[in-house]
Image: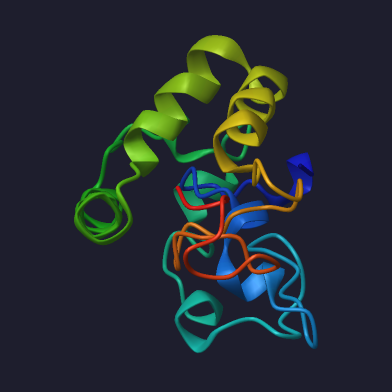
Length: 135
């Protein structure tokens, strides 16, 4: 897991289908636009001036945190993908990025082949649906 792939909102781009796609991998929210889904290219959290002014670069330092953007994103990811940006940010704030990455690696590693499980599809892209890597 690469710390450069942790987005300001708390999304772990290491487990994103856009990043894991092999032909044209997305470089994550902090990277360039090559391979990046349209929704990520126009993400208002990434361009937020208040967030950019923070020391850490994470949304939890903002005076408006959690703002409507983060709440909406969190709600969507809780209902669709069973994960929470707000919980991720709270963990990072309390425990640091390194411990967050360790926790995420345990949670999102396929037990069968060791590849990363995509949060968006819920299984390992190597083993496929029904493989031992389902999350």
